[in-house]
Image (cartoon, rainbow, N blue to C red; front, top):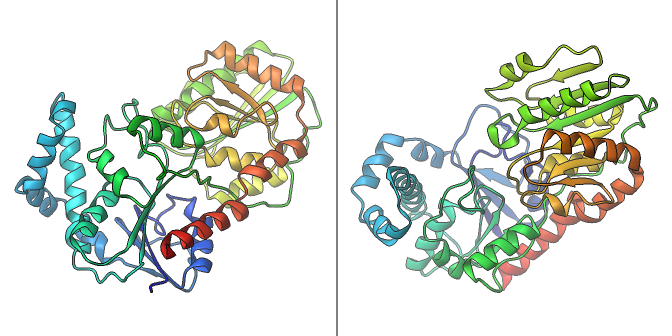
Length: 404
């Protein structure tokens, strides 16, 4: 019987993405004798992993060979069968290209792992509910080895047809029938997938989490000084430009208050945001670009933060909100994805999915009046999004699935 888990990632443990796995990998290392990570892209920067974790770098060379993959895909029966199977969902060239990309990835995983020596009760864990999950289903269907397949589901790989997600995911119904378990990170995601595909008994909620730093952010001593913080990459879905507009509006409406806005995160529009901010006497902005998570934690430990703000148009459950709440910082966020599961009346204020500037400024003023207790905000986080609790429970569940 194998006590091995094979974790399929995009980049982890390389680069800085998939940061949630930095905590989870230690629990996987404790729970399984052998852990094999297979990323589809590697780089020179590698994060620390436990001693019993092995990294397969070879697969990434096959995955990054785009020309070879394109040729294999175009001449494969699987590509043309997939187009025919999903013909009713295809409305243009973009949909065909989407299927091409999907099939290309599936074929690459299938060819590489088709020669892999799986053991009975190996547990395949795809961190994203996407192409790799489909490929391992195909491999399992033609092999006699009884390995198990589970996947997490976040946002992009879960919701369909949003402006920032694929219009549809090929073979989703089939995969859901065959997968051993799917673990969405939010109750919203669980309900979405169960109702959309009428799937029962295969979907379980498994929340992400961050560690307790055993500290609350310092209190804001001057009520006329506001410290607003946001953390995200800068792309249209995250609406950081809109946060800038709201902060400027807040400063104009409250000339007697000093407004400080600090943003952590980078993106192509960072320079444009810097240029767009008005020079107001009571507004200070600090656009820091990308920084390590440790830098953000240090900031929360040392600096007073009045409110954390997230105005995304789409989310799973933002880890950035978990981090802020773990320091007792109240949050304002849009009601998208699972954000309503972490931003409640006890922890902050939930806006509509597309609020106006007036609504955001009004929410900031309401939260200032509410003057939420930091310890109470942290207590809600402690109950729901503590990494130590959530990842221990997740690994225990994986061991049960593996041995069933």
